Amino acid sequence: MLSPPGGTQRCFQAILLLALIVFLLAGFLHRDIRLFEPLLWGQAEGPPVINVMFLKTHKTASSTVLNILFRFAETHNLSVALPAGSRFHLGYPWLFLARYVEGLESPGPQRHFNIMCNHLRFNLPEVQKVMPEDTFYFSILRNPVFQLESAFAYYRKDVPAFRAAGSLDAFLAAPRTYYHRGAGLRNAPARNGMWFDLGFDNDAPADEAYVRARLADVERRFQLVLIAEHLDESLVLLRHLLRWRLDDVVAFPLNSRSPRSVAGLSPEARARARRWCALDWRLYEHFNRTLWARVRAELGPRRLRSEVARLRARRRELAARCLQDGEAKNGSQITDRRLRPYQSGVADIMGYNLRRDLDNQTRQMCLRMVTPELQYMAHLYARQFPGKPPKNIPFLEE
Ligand SMILES: Nc1ncnc2c1ncn2[C@@H]1O[C@H](COP(=O)(O)OS(=O)(=O)O)[C@@H](OP(=O)(O)O)[C@H]1O
Image (cartoon, rainbow, N blue to C red; front, side, top):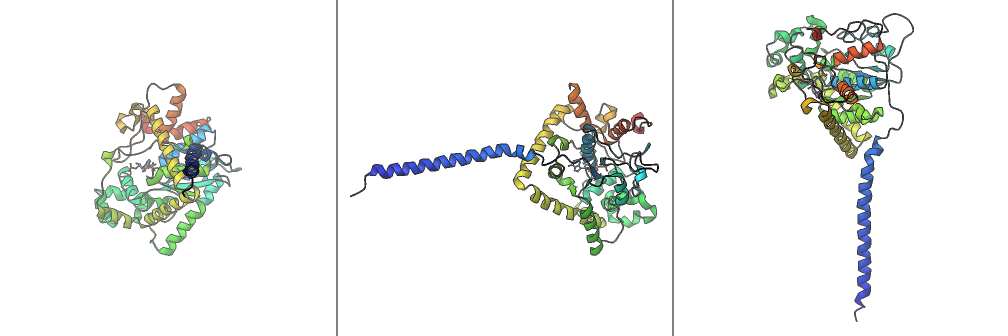
């Protein structure tokens, strides 16, 4: 005889119902946790880091990072190690000396600053005279092929090796024809420019032991090295390490050339650039690899994806709120000359027009995000040293 069908059926239905409840609960909880995840992630585990040294390498998206730091300094009323007197950088291309900083030129008890981020050639013992002991050090690198191409356009008229060559292709085909050590530091941007900015010899042979020793120096000193090609991921990691808010690291790209002034390079020219700048190439390869290892260890792929998406969404939102047409403009299209970026070489450097309908508070916030480096530095200088003559920016007077 068969057992009464009602019992088995009820048992089966109960199991099914239980499975359904478990399934729905799991799905709901999962969604629920995911809903709160970004909030939990956003919570800092201590006060924000406020002593920060950024080694601003050349042509690596470093102006965008500098803007982040200037804004943080201004909104938190922090002191910035600014170039002394009428200068615009901290002694570059010479190795940095503490006396290049305003307020440290005369002997006396050393003063410390919170933020240091203007162009300089790294020289640790002198930087340590300016920055507190607990300073967070970081820098940025870019693929040396594109960094060199950008430098060529930007310094075309200033760097003897570039001036002598008709084009970057011609330069890379026979760099020794144009590049002579006799020109000294003025030729630094023409070879291993990032290696040079780190304070190393940009003409040294790329011997394995030497390269490894210098990479280890950088590892030891810098808590983080950002990569321009992965700037958003880098900024997410930076924010996490500094315990800053999302808006602190949201930035519009600054100092970018208009696409028409960017030269395409053939695969041969790219390979030559990698060989010519072999030290920079090793540097870039190494820190590109360690950035991803670091991101995996600190954040993991899911959190990284979510935070990068939040950063991009916020940038889009602010671009729509702040910017005329929501986008960058060529240098000549910028109507307010105070927002015009410095133009150099044969590069057409882009900037931004602000929307006209902004209320005062929004305008103030947007203005900080689009103010070019030199103007922002002059503004901070006037704020920090009201008794000193203000910095004069010659191209704004023209
Ligand atoms: N993610 C991202 N965001 C912003 N900018 C980026 C980024 N990646 C690269 N770049 C390019 O970096 C170049 C500007 O570099 P810098 O600001 O360091 O230049 S400078 O040394 O301060 O003059 C400038 O390069 P070019 O446009 O090739 O000249 C920027 O376009």
